[in-house]
Length: 244
Image (cartoon, rainbow, N blue to C red; front, side, top):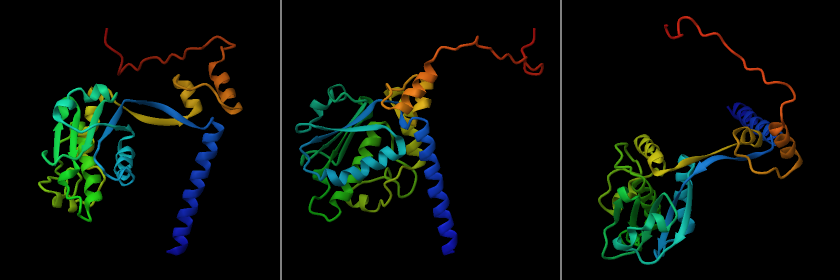
C-alpha cells in the first residue's frame, strides 16, 4: 500500500511538472475571461477578517468570481438601497453589528444581503466559525440562492446561532451551486478563467507581452498570412442537409 501511494504521488508530481513546463513554453498562465465582482462591506463589524478569508477562499474555489472587501459605515436598510452602485459591484454583502437587527437580512432583488454578527453570541467559542458560515450564506443570498435541501449544507435551514454549529461543511451543495450559476448572467457576472498566453492571444484578450517567449507568441499569432487562406469546405451529408 505504501509503495502504491508513493507511485501515485510521483505520477501526480510528474503531471504537475509537465503542465508547468507546457504553460511556460506557451507564455505562462494568464487570465482569459472574467467580469463582475461581489463586494463584502465591513460596517464596523469588529470581526477577525483573517478568519473570514477561509469563507471567501471557499466561495472563490467553487465559483471563480472576484470578491473585494470594502470599508463601510454603520449598516441600515435605508443606506443599503444604493449599495450595489456605490460599491461598484454586482452584488453586495454587508457585515455589521446591530443589536436591534435580526441575524440576517436578504434583498436579492436589490442584490444585497446583511449578516449581523451581534446575533452570533460573540463570547461563544464558535463565534468565528459562525461568522464564516453566515458570510457564505450572505453571499449566496445576495446572489439569489434559497435554502438548500442538502443535509449539512451551508444553506441548510438555520433558526438560531446554535444551528450553525451543526453545519460542518463550508462547501457548496449542488442545488445552491446551480442556483448561483443560473443567476450570474442576469447579474452580469462571468466567472474567471485562466489559460496559456497563446490561448489568450488566439482569443484576442492577451495583455501586451512582457518577455521574449510571450513576444514571440504574440508576433506569431498576429502576423499577416504569407499565403492565401484556404477555406476548407466539407460537403454536407445528404442525411443532414436541408431538403430543397
